Length: 137
Ligand SMILES: [Zn+2]
Ligand SMILES: [Zn+2]
View 1 (cartoon, rainbow, N blue to C red):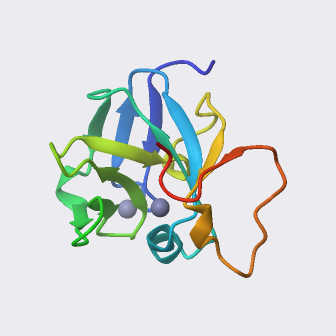
View 2: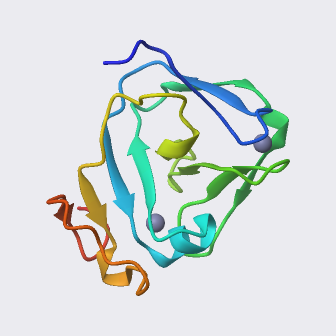
């Protein structure tokens, strides 16, 4: 296990944060929104213990894209880095994007969700991870 807190930052480095508890679970999301949001075939992301993420810099730069039918997606308005999404019910932080965490996050993706929408141009790797056609239950 890496030392806590985990730290992370956006691409420009003006948004910084700490996560004080070990990450709960991690997986790849193959949904169409994540493809658009990231420009990639799938988004690796991790659930956190509620309340364990604390901003240490750049709160004023945070913006959220709020789709009508999905979780608000928080990003750095200076550099565009995807940071995390929010649970619509209470606005708490939902999955954090693994790529914005510094170093080893101490967890590995263990599932793939929304594989029914996987990009046609990249086969889903035969990595033995559990697959869910829609959102992981
Ligand atoms: Zn930034
Ligand atoms: Zn997704």
